Length: 168
Image 1 (tube, rainbow, N blue to C red):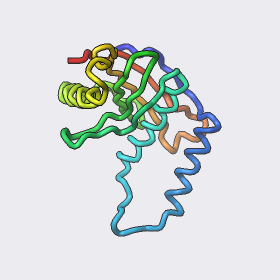
Image 2 (cartoon, one colour):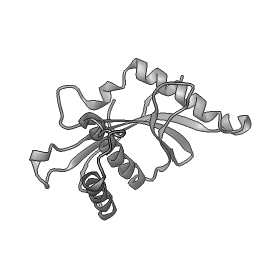
Image 3 (tube, rainbow, N blue to C red):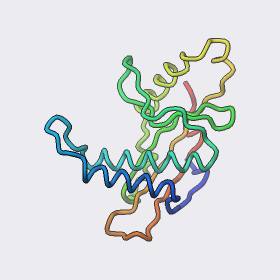
């Protein structure tokens, strides 16, 4: 896969405000025995999805669903959105550093199959006559978050892979 774009960016004002609110909420939220804090790797994933959401919106995508699930299948689709007249099912992979293996390689055969099945269920929400006319594709977004020790000047890096794999 070759990225459509590779970009390092600093947060926009809106993004910065939302990230600040998220951080404040985690500090002032009352501790509850029934709602344990999310593990660090899940928090990293959520932050990556948020970064991808803002990035895709800047590129003209209209996001219509986040973490879309169905009771019929396990898992979720991270983001679903329109890019022009194409419905995109978007998988986001987040890492805190660039290792030997790029993040997008984590979308293996099993994950691609699950995403295809989830996409089919989502598409059934449209009338059949409309469904046949909708172009669909699967995009993958790799997000590389700077580690906290990197300081405030280190930028988030995002790689977008449109049409990362075919619809089955």
